[in-house]
Image (cartoon, rainbow, N blue to C red):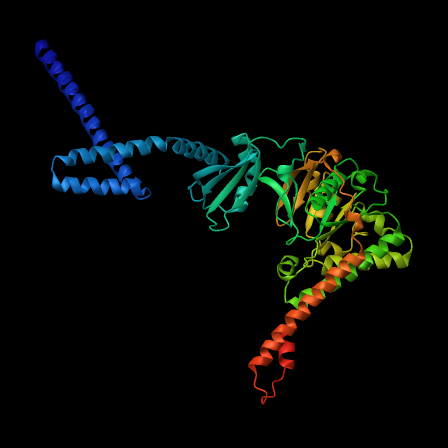
Length: 480
């Protein structure tokens, strides 16, 4: 009986072993078939995005029909392409798994669906952008920003919703910190007429488009680098052939390198006259533009025989200028600056105004509303930042000389270029530009307009019968 029991036990062990062997073989066969099918589908899917692979597949299919022996070879090629694609996608799957763990850990998901990783790219040497497909609102991303930074162990510079498809979210992540100083180099000079560069952001070079943002505020405490930004902008303006005027009640000490080519005003009487003359010039240019039927300096210079120069008035300390005790002078100064910020947008006359500490009692609402481009340095007090930027961002940036926040239609942390006065070689010519030369250009422009108008009228008269009483007043009204 004992032998019978042992025989049955041995039989049971044998049966179990056979079952295990078959199970393993079945699992391997199933896994192999599944893998072959997976790689075959993967290989076929590559053809959707690669025209060369698609043409190759079509060629193989034609060969398969011509010769049955080619079927196995064709399948092996497709499976091989699938394996190659699988290996190629391994880094992406690794990133997907990594970010899935992060999003689950911080609770960033919608109905248990976490954002899926799509791609990443370097936007500059200082930052990269990672793209996700997400059904989670961007407001939730903003709330989880601190937690994401902790899990990723990286500084998130911005969280941006794709402008074309709201379901895509971009994380802008710091690759390395902005340097504490970036020296100005000629390669930063933009060749376009209406572009000036300020410094470097995490996304690349920061620029002022004077056609889009004709006026600017630059705010910063003593030692922040505010005057250095003005020097860098003056240098670029001279290099581009702009007419430059500097108003500086510190008598231009910080700008002595440009004294040969830039007129510097530090007397209230002279400053009032300069600003009043500029207002008059603005109105003359507007009249010229109306006569020519153009809307901007660039458009005007395309049709004029003698182009008008772009003109920039730099004011190093606006509060000092506007704090004059003489009420009449103060009124004229405010009126002139308000008029310029309001009217000179399109005529190529610009104001770039430095201010040490923004004050709502100095900067009127009209001036502020017409100067959309703001550059603001670090302030320990939040109020100056709120006046300039509408938020506290300037109080949160590092207290580094040359580090500013720029506001145009967005906010950017910028390390402004350090400009060395030794880079500039005086031209000794700009100061010879007088009001008479400007008047001559305007006179020539008026003559050009009149000539073009007379030619058009003569052509029209030649086409019109002498017996027809044609009303040219309609033409004049249309032209106006």
